[in-house]
Image (cartoon, rainbow, N blue to C red; front, side):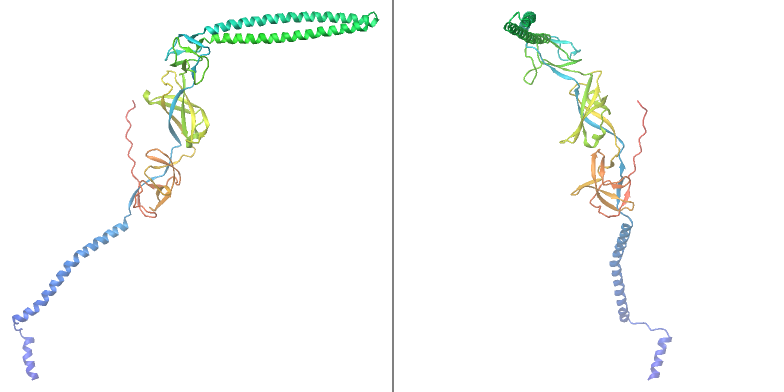
Length: 438
């Protein structure tokens, strides 16, 4: 049986294989087809995921290799010399309201508003009939006092003569009494008479002193009235321009000054004016007497007038923390007028200029203003600062930064403490070529 099997199997190994039947071939192709389909489906499902993972890995690697870019600006010291521009009001150095010194009516008026006058120029005349009568009465009183003085002096001279006569008589009687020719009673009588004459002389001399004082009072009153008579002419106290006229011919005026009395004119000197400025506390120490200034008036086409600080208040106003200073301005052409508004430009030198950063480089939070400092390694550090004056595009930093440090121009919500960024310094625009001067 074994031999029969070998005989039958040998032709299958060595000889050509016999053809398979169709059912057997289909059974072999079915598993292969299923395996191929499964592999194809698996490949179709995994390939997009592999591509996406590769892209994510590449993006992550790129993000790890590149940091956020932040535009920075260096912290620079401000200029040692700055120009301070302050608003000012122009006033006259000498401006007065002219009042009447004598009661009466305005008889003549020689000037009006806008007229230029010199010192001593007659502005108006006042008619005062009562003053003329008072002057005549004072003159009569003066003469009576002189006559009384002369009468008193004459009486005093008579008293002196009587005293001298009494003295001579006393000396003679004393000699006779000493020789026993006359009694001592007679000598005592002559002694008493002499003392009486001395008393009369002393009284007459006192009367002379009183009469002299009365005369001096009468003369003083007479002089006062004559001075008032001279004040009937209203004269200019200094060179200037009549800025206001309050009266006219025929108006009743009253002597004196005060809020209840209306002046006749207002006079201002325009050859030299002054501008009052209020200097902030930070620059108050640099504004000294003698500092040159420039005064500009926009309504005059921006024309500049030379000025100089003449005085300061030497103390700051506690409500505004400013220093009042006066700037004297020469006005030879009388273009400047009292009451104008002007701008005073003052060049100041600062011993310790503050640092400057872009105005957009700080952020105000609960702890006050702060900036984002980017160090040399690109690490962000937030720092609190104390700001100074705002110059528009730049702002002063008084504390919290050092010159040469870099700050982020704008602080976004993405910036965090300790973040690593790529600092970018913007290019400065090239300066435009200057054209030919005009």
